[in-house]
Length: 404
Image (cartoon, rainbow, N blue to C red):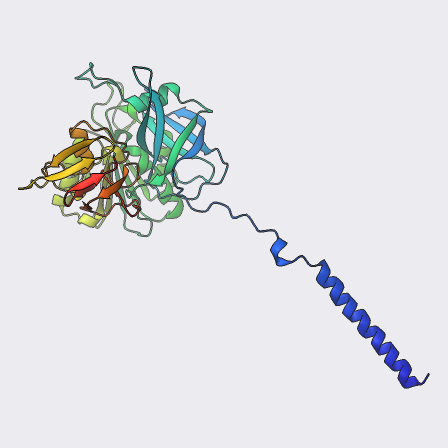
């Protein structure tokens, strides 16, 4: 065998080994179709429909034990993505009526703390019978929460919603004005602002009847002590006799423009107001009369369930009535323009329909439109499906048939 032939054999053997190595490596490699697909964690705070939550714990928040916080964990154990401070949760609750029949009731409660990926918190005030009308029943759902919702209970919840939220993209000093249990969304805003924008000036004016109604008091005092840009003013309308000013309050009376002039420095502020209807009826117009720009006044009346605002629409009487048919209820009624929205219209005529926020945010009143069209004074924040409408903020443009 010549040297040239021997060299050829050696080269061929080496080439065969290289080819074999390539084939072996290729066979060992998993085809792309069987590669494990990484599981993507839930990253969107919103989910469609109802989601089950378990009550992890509950804490009484005030001396009178009339305001209680409930901590809610998702049963599916998926992390909770961030929500906007000031938003609320919508609950669908099954209650037994006086005849022993089960009925579904919808209520909205504000989230009362900044984001926690493991649990939501709401704070519910027990609503008694009105002082001047003890013959009327107490709050149906609030008393259910206080008396029957204990750790381990399962609640059906819709995703965080609502447009009464803190503008965290601005450094304009924020003024949070709370009346009673209206503190819940504003406390969440304050906690979020201090965490995300510690250099932003933040003023919280908190009005209650007396110290027995104060909630989150220890947290508020700690926030004031630890954050030089957080300024707290507690206002009591009827302080308890044993308490002196500067003990558990800074002013006596009600939150008004005179008080705000006293506690706020000169310059532009962004106002966020939440409280009972009498407070809203006097303070919100007064802020505008004071010269605060409309874009700098944000408000909600004791949570989304009772909000009423000029932006929701104005009742406009019609010369020729419109025919509105509620197909499921088998009722046909004349819309004369006396009502601001279809929900008010239906309720005034004794038609009971599901509703929650009454502000176009939660989607509980989403209703199919069989024929006709619905208009909105302001576009709802809830994403309405084609062929559906939100009756809490909608009004007919002509004859209308609803699947309700």
